[in-house]
Image 1: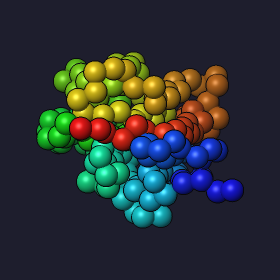
Image 2 (image 1 turned 45 degrees about the vertical axis):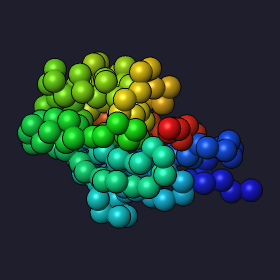
Image 3 (image 1 turned 180 degrees about the vertical axis):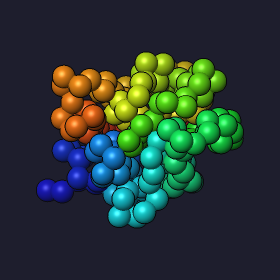
Length: 174
């Protein structure tokens, strides 16, 4: 049998299936899928260098917005402004591509940590990172993977291997 987004098992009732992967080096963009809808990918041409973000309604599973923020040559201010506009109950999915950390500052890291991330504080140059959290959650998200950029263990010249993650996000209840 095939499950939503190609994950390995069906999600329980009142959960959204998701699967995501970080970018591969600076060649293949990240991919974010929720409930069998590919929200962001290279094929859709809506991903870019830096941090790729998809916002999903926590009650309906509907896509609200997708954006990417260049954290190498860009500016962190638009990311901070974007993070501040996220409404309570929104599912937030993030995936890095190429370099997602160089321009990250304390304020941006704090806003992402408030969405449930624990790894964002240690995110470094060209690390690969995928994260799924939510606005208004009171706990640390179980959905996070981080691989450090390390020239001794990197799979690609100058970049670590792709990180992939799948799971079932609890639907927001009133």
